[in-house]
Image (cartoon, rainbow, N blue to C red):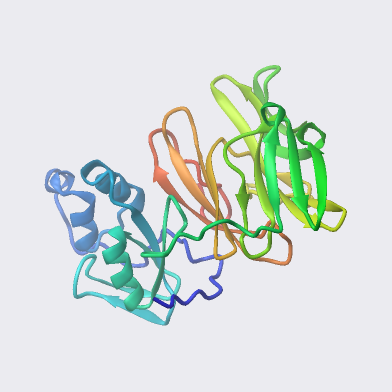
Length: 306
């Protein structure tokens, strides 16, 4: 199947579905309806609840995120029985349903692997970039352009806004951290050879504070970039970010960087960074995959609110 992949604006993961409630439903009757049924009735249901329902009933079936990539996508003939406008977002259970959504004009990807429905195994990433983790995550050894690069993670630094200072512990306005070690698996963009690296900055009070760096391989060396997670205030420069929690996984999909992070309660969120002028890309949007406690783990920005 020849899948179209076009540029998607920063609105494409918006959780505001743009439709009103289908009518008044009593609180007791509404509580008895499953999220998928309420969604089909026209309610603005948090998509995280639908994903949780599917994961409980069908734990081995993949869930796909789908964004309408044309003027309108008519999905009224089967679940979720809705019309979608361009850049509106929904979810699909399994490759068959995701493939059907793509026939309606959606672009879909597996929320865990980043792969399109029925996509073949991508195989090995770009062989021009190879890297291994050494010394319990404190060092990397990379090979590209015919040379070997020895990289010390503890030399990498980043300025974090609303940072957790473990000496208190307390939240401070901002603080510069050096990397401690690599966390999770590295991700290599098969198109560019760029390497996304999750790095632990601090760990205390059952909380990890992490950041993501991107290595841009160069002949005889590399350029280092910091992935910028937005927040309530504007970031002062390209060396700054808001913190991430425990990293669950990194994945490149059609040059989009997908970032899953979670906390001790079991909450998880998926952040998407779209291709841009720098190797890190630009923050696009976020979906709550599991929301156990608090407001969730998606960044609080002017567009999302609190």
